[in-house]
Image (tube, rainbow, N blue to C red):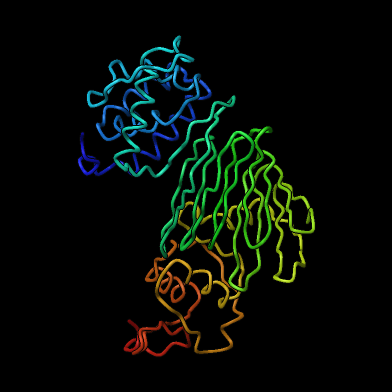
Length: 347
């Protein structure tokens, strides 16, 4: 049997394969099928799709995918199909056998599903975990058609994607959730002791440094829940801040402010008059560089503009050019922000 090391692009291919299976559950158009054929031209992609589809037992999905695999994988030996599935095409029995062979060899799928015979996209995800390092953003398509965008230095766990519910947990950092509508399966995100329940929507959840929670809704409607029941509902353009003591505050964001707040999904940071100290604190989330404001009068200086997340040189240039604020690197490596020290001191 082939070793997975033969396919160095499999981790990414598996994510894309999961998205294709989710699309297949809704039925593929002729154009999508042609696109899928082109995508499968890559051996890594074809391998990932075969392996992942073998772990599904949803008839509509397998029927949609069946014509994609003209012949069963060569390394799989078909076992006799159970009598209860005698009318099922031989290809489905082979898919089940492939699942057993895959599990027996310890094949580590990033998106790993157990069979579920319930209607719809009936799959329950074994606990999957996605993390990002400092300065990294990552997009993860989920099998139900939802999309998870993970911000810098963050961690998200997919607890379950089942026939009754969809459960995720934000362990640290920030993530944005674009949720595929499915009224029969509530989509919930647990974070900081609270639960955000989506009602067909897109929203951002951020665990704050002090232990609080921030939720922003950019599409649709969400409901905030806690151990004491409902905290409140949020609509598009609204945000909620929840302190560590459970106190909450709801505010409104205009279109520009909303776009700025979520600019990180495009690798940008946008500031609209925030104090310099706050802007540098936010910028520090995306780089291992550290900053120190040496002149206290600058801490409350309001700044604005778009910056590439983590691009420290561009930030220093912008501060000098647009705001007349100099910077230099101290002997300890910390970038000191303060009055103009003279050209010789600038780095």
